[in-house]
Every structure is written in structure tokens, then in C-alpha cells.
Image (tube, rainbow, N blue to C red; front, side, top):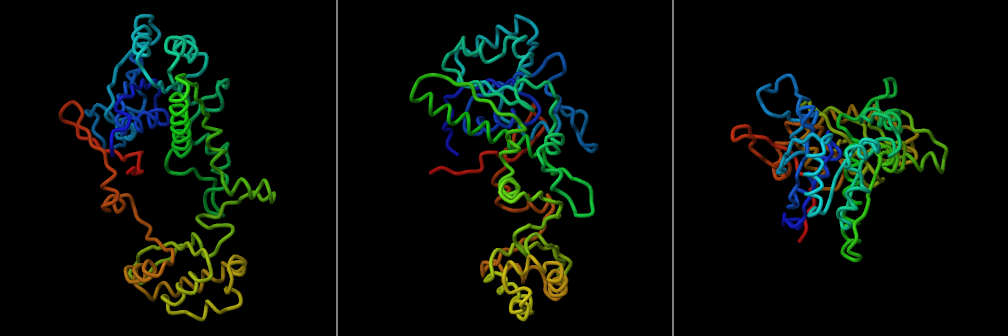
Length: 357
């Protein structure tokens, strides 16, 4: 991708995932990103978040590598006036600061937006908080998934509330802050002035509830745990084993797609059954329908069925593990590589997955 931000200078004062993900995005597009890490604590805490199989000799964990690439890393003690002065000097020429300090901590270290924007009025100061700028609560992703409704909805009907297996709220907040920064850059082009852009993890989470939010707001429906099922569509999210032991998932969105599915499964009579002839009926009778479809899936092999469905626009997918995902050419094209200290190869996935021509 063209380095459209190659003239941008960014100071990343953030740690863990959400803030550094914003810095990664800007670095991918060519920006010069200086990542400031806490000298007193040995740097970003995620440096040590290793899996059991990872080498303790490696300078950083795989987790850290996920959102840190092509950044100039500097260790500073921002409790000292000397190191504060270094950052203040960089700010004079900087375009963007990305931070996730508590408000009181930022002011104490002279890293708050008022101080830095007084040094450089054209600066865009982008800040992520957990529960709002004035909250003192410690914010970790699983807590935000719990308090924003995601965990309550997620999981099997007879199982406990379950978090998503990625730091979903951090990712959502990072996307919100990226959008805010891009808007601020456009505004600066018009006015020459910088901006203060902020988002909380909680606001980013609630803003992403989409149809589940409106199901409550307009219909007073509290979403319950349904596994992968969809409350409005069937069969959607149901999983099935094929004759050769592969696991597939359906996303049937209309009657035509359902007719095609039944044809390829060798059970066209299901499509004309009064209980399944429309989506409304299929939602009402989804349990019985799933029993019938499970039988049919066991009569066909996955590769053949997937090919037929893909060719005829019937939405179906193979449930893949992470190894299978990265065996795909499209996934390989999204990899970013970097060698640390001349001997530690690292990889991560691009966050700028779009293309501009």
C-alpha cells in the first residue's frame, strides 16, 4: 500500500493493545511512529505476556508483536522532568500523539492534551480511556465485554456467559480512534488547527451492539445466549458435520438460498414443507429443521457441497482453525514481518486491510 502518511510524525504514549493498534495502523501507512515505553516497569506490560511455548530469551512476546511493527521504541521515565522535556521537544514537530493515560496521571507527567497542544496547536491528541476520562476504574477487555452486554449474549444456551477469544473491545476502540484521527486530519487541512480526539472502551463497545441494541431499544427484546444462531434468520449459525467429518456453518438469508441448499443436500422436499417454506417458519421450527439437516449433511462430502453452494450463491462456510486460516493466500498477503535485534523474526497481521487505487 502506498505510504500516504510518510510525512506524519506520531508519538505513541499508549500501551497494551488499543492505543498501540492505532500506532500500528499509522505505521502501516508510512508514518514515523515513536513508541515511548515506561523505563521504570521494563516497558509495555505485554512484552511479558508469553505463551508457555514461547522463548523467554526473545525480547518480546507474540502478543506484543501483534500491534507493534516498524516503530522507533524509546524507553523513558516520564516521572522525570528530563524525559518529559524530550517528549515536549518531539511534540513541537509531531502531528499526532496517541495516549491512554488516566487524566490525573497525564497531568502529573505533563503529558496531558492541554500541555502538549499548548506546545504545538496543530497537534492531534488522540486518547483512549476505559470507562470515560474521569473514571479511575482499571479497564481490561473481559470486564468491558461483560459490562457492555457482549458476554451476556455470547455462549451456548445452557452455558455460562462467554467472552470473545480476542480483545474485541480494544479492537473496536482502536477503530473508533483511527476514524476520529482521520476526521481530525481532514479538519486540520481546512483550519490548520489540531484537535483533541477521545474515545472510551465502553462507548466503543456500546456503539458496536448494532442490531442487538435496536432489538432492545425498539422491541424490548433482551438477547439471550444462542451460541452461533441468529435470532431473526434460520438456518443461520447452525453447524453440521459432513460425511468426511468436516464441520460447516450455514448463513441462509432468504428462501431461494434455502431451496438451493436442500437441492444440493438431496432433500428438496424440505424446501416445500409448510414448516420450512419461509424464513419466519424456519425460525419458528429451527430445532426440527436442524435435526433434518444434520441427517442430510452426513450424506455428502464437504468439498463437493462447498463448491456447489459457492457456485450457486448459497452462503456456507468451513469452520477453520487458525492454522488453516493462515494457509490461505489471502491471509498470507496480510502479514507484516520484522526482525528484532537482528535475530528474532516476528510476524503480525495488517490492520489496514483496505486497498486504495
